[in-house]
Image (cartoon, rainbow, N blue to C red):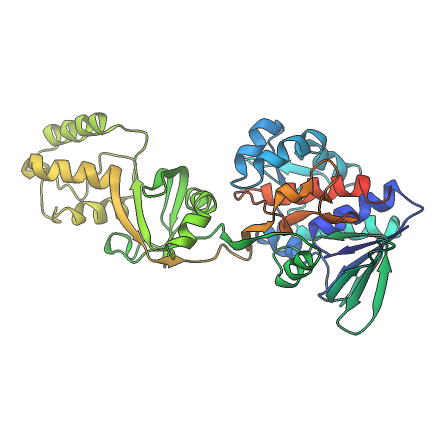
Length: 404
């Protein structure tokens, strides 16, 4: 049996390797348009490759997927992060978990993962072809076989086909030509562009735990946030961008954001704490005596925003300004004016409609013999290794069935 995998990324390689290992009698060819396979794996995680996440309960794991969680629930019961750790471990690559759950190779070098995948593919006799850009795929109605036309004019034939082209327009075009529905892809996982005096000259300052909310979308996330030259980033912002990807796209990335810089306090407890400091430090300047766990420079900007001057002492703080300060600290309003990108990682929501895929095998329900894995599907995870895990899982499932 001849099997062709289109796309030399994480999902394509994983599917090709697992298919070739399970069905040594099959001929597996992997086509990659670029000169180097696994390019995204190489640059991910700042060159360290965030392989997966140390969450070993499928029910908990699926909560990290704004789209695709329901379909992945059964898939993760068959291949989940523990299986990923074991798979790489059995090939001599040990993974380690960091405090936040992200898992990396112990070498902290993505080349370890890239080399392992290429070596495993070669050992399984996968025919890897780079610089092989596919422009068209057709299926013979009589035989069910596929004809793949490359940009250089070469025509290849196969019995079964795996699409693992990621968020690539050509991949979507080919998929549509084979009778599938594509849910329009839009960006996910991005930073927020915000021009606001309160954040000016604070680039590099982070707050360990803040709560950010998109009130019109009724979405909120908690976690670290980072102030940047262009606005806001950090895990809480990235998670909010993923869950709000479609909403933010539809409002052209212009909407209100509410920030609670101190989610560990409710407003009454915060009021009591500030009043206690006011009564104890009456002669001290408000600017230099921050009563809460906020970076000093951020505190200065936030109190200036409610009209508290550099020379104002605690004794001079009126109830009206105190109310404004509490509001500023717990429900500060900011205007998102656009989106940035998240490092080199470009994730989209959208792709092949999941209702058209059998998640036991990853085979198409519309076009028998066509399989899908990875980011071409309408699946995306938040940051932290979840997108790679869905690539490994869907690639592994496809690899179990492709050569049958």
